[in-house]
Amino acid sequence: MKADVAVTAKILHILFNKIWDEEQVPKDWKEGLLIKIPKKGDLSKCDNYRGITLLSIPEKVFNSVLSNGTKDSVEVQLQDQQAGFRKNKILRYNTACTNPITLDGEDLDDVKTFTYLGSIIDEQGGSDADVKERIGSNVEIPPEVIVLNCIVLPHKELSQSARNQIIL
Image: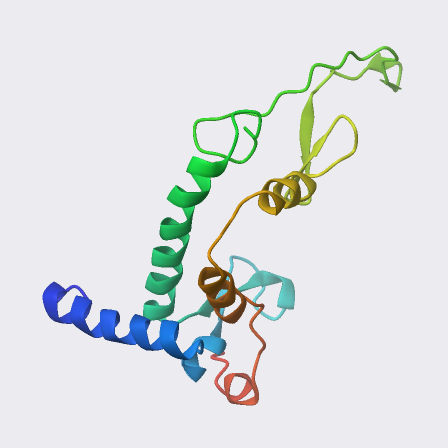
């Protein structure tokens, strides 16, 4: 893709316009090639491998273009109070801890948020997904972009051809 930027840009532009018009992505974008990478240690144990999935480069470029295009229009529509999950903004809660939690005779530190399994949990037990859902419900995004997100971003399934191509 870096060999001739002008030619690559023209080809991708044609492809992206076709995806936009037909509201369909190429079949190979729905598949990934799973590769096992060995870790240190006993390679006879499954735990000593990690898997990576190779995806289509044009798909990654398209997702980036789609994401960057919507980010600016959404940013303009959000109110200042919707500070969570925005660049250069932070989310704060003004609540006081009245009952400290004690574990093994020691009081635990008072924190406003913590991360559990990749989600940020706040003092009321709400997750960052809850906040993102509330923010998204008040933003006007063009229907075409929503359709493209629904086409491009669903979870990928390991197809039969991909199962046969797992590299050991």
